[in-house]
Amino acid sequence: MVRKPEEILNELLRDRGIESAEDISEFLSDRPKKTYDPFLLLNMEAGVDLLLSEINKGTRICIYGDYDADGVTSICILSHIIGILTDDLTYYIPSRFEEGYGLNKNAVKKLHDDGVGLMITVDCGSVSYEEVEYAKELGMRVIVTDHHSIDSIKADTILINPKQKECTYPFKELAGCGVAFKMAQAIQQRAGLPKSVINDVLDLTAVGTVGDVVSLTDENRTIVKYGLNKVNAGARQSLKKLKEAISLKWITSENIAFGIAPHINAAGRMASARDAVELFMADNEMIMDKKVEDLVFYNSQRKKKQEEAYNKGIELLTGNEKFVVLHMENIHEGIGGIVAGKIKETTGRPTIIVTPSGEGYLKGTGRSIDKIDIYQVLKNHEELFERFGGHRSACGFLMKKDNLKALREKLDHEMDRLLEEDPNVFETESLWDMELMPEEISVELACELMKMEPVGQGNPRPVFVLRNIRPAQVRFMGSDSAHAKFNAESENGKRAECVLFQKAQEKRDLLCGGDLIDIIGTIELQKWNGRERVQFIVEEIKKCK
Image 1: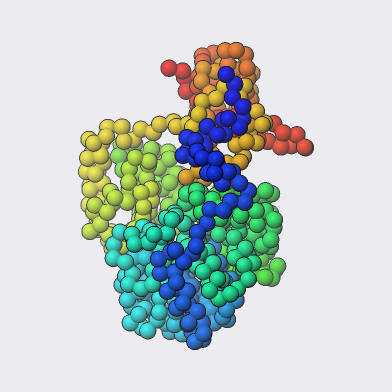
Image 2 (image 1 turned 90 degrees about the vertical axis):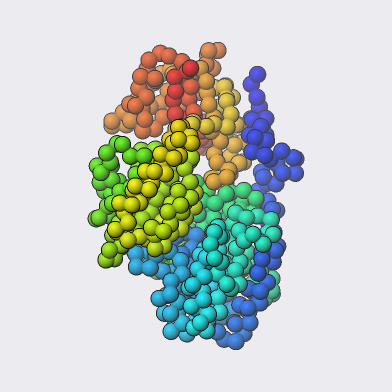
């Protein structure tokens, strides 16, 4: 029986745990209300009281952030709000190449010498115990705002992080910029600022939230929905100029993830993240144009260096690796993580790339596959590292060069253990949300599915499977015939228009062999000259079992 588009949507929502009429209404609403009192965050009241007290004293304040899209937007959010209350405000972003992630004592000393009396961290600092103690010894006050997991000694200061065990905040998955945004809300309320100042930074909060790949559910979904509306209204001229420079018209969460955020990140990878901060804080069009030009250039350089490094990395593989560890001397260290991710996708193996970092040291960055917690695997051997951090799917570290051989050996042993526990640890499954019939794929269904936006981490774009279909009217496209367009025809003669990108030659036998196949993919609505059409974008093709 053919289901109506709204029935398919409701079934998808139920499968994701969104079942009650109230929850469905909130999830689909253009004006969601799921947001919480910022003072429910542990230590928020103490943090805001200290900040306002120091402002009244005329203390010089520094916002200390990270060099990625989350850190950049966090700095801009708090700079906007605090800048309304004081002119004695600066910010600091450590160099990816010379200082690395998070607080470091040299930077703390530099800020103290510059007259900073209060340092507020964004997107970092939760476990920077020694650095915070050093700041306190110098006479500085410190407020830490962060969202990372806390698995070692906490900084002994005012710490605002929803992941603290003692914190009862209802939603734990805020990005760093989300925590900064909640602090901005608290400052606005306590200082009696107009509510419009909060609306002013919603666009940046949405960009940072999507860019940091946190769950787009609950309060994050509310933030991103309102923020996307503001982005698309063109309220921030600098963001509008960046959007136009990279040929984006209507911005979705996916446009941020694959367009805007990589350009922001490219500044920190290839040069300095200050260029991105200066873009979003600029009120001069000439400065905006120059900074947009810089970000576009950095991203093009990043892509070029990334491709070169990826090709070098592939050449170094033996094909027998269980855990890929590549020592690459001459690659730009700013793109190591992206390259590790690409090699991981190609090999289906967890991958670490190490590059030289000063005399006798190596900097490492890793990415992992679904079934392997790379953070835990490396934490089992953290005695090898000078500095180490990360999470389930990514990690970073600094180690002595002499420890590289031991690291490789220990990772091989770890993989032997994991394979013994689960012989299928390297196997990936093609997962889909729902089985459809070709006749259920329609413009109306595509429009219903658009109500699930914003999609991303925690709320992925729905993936469907069409079973027992026969490809008809197959047409190869592109100069090397890498793409294909065809109709998916069911036994009852119903059809759906399909497009396969990049893999057409790899799947040629399945497309042209005359056998029944299953296809897995997503539904896309296309608009052209006022007309709408729907296509099934194929991600995988399998022979029917």
